[in-house]
Length: 140
Image (tube, rainbow, N blue to C red; front, top):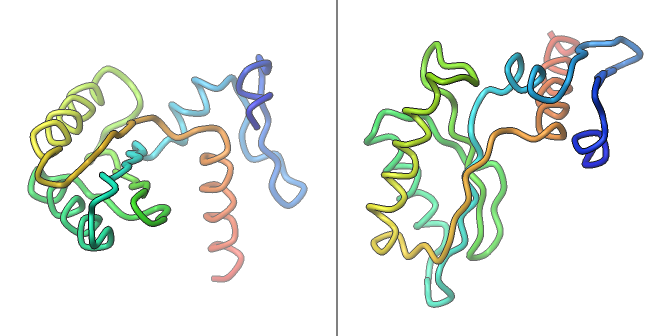
């Protein structure tokens, strides 16, 4: 997937033998990106990282954003923060991105965050999301 992101000028996503989506990376992100990913590493002295995950999600909820744990390891976790209602990957999402950074910087010491990163969904994450939706349709 990394090679596709770097080298592909036109990308196609095929699921179950059916071409689901085509376009360049920015077009696929515009159409199928449903949120931001916030990756957080905690200070090594944090005793209960699961409690900190929960507190971080609560901090997002307090500012009106839906966040869920996407991946979790000791002292390191990744959250998926859904775009707010009617947001798409364009200039309107800049305000939400700014709010995410503001919340993280404001609560960095309280949540014992060592460092963090914020990014749009990668091509791999878009593929997984589309596959999951296709799988859910088949189960219904």
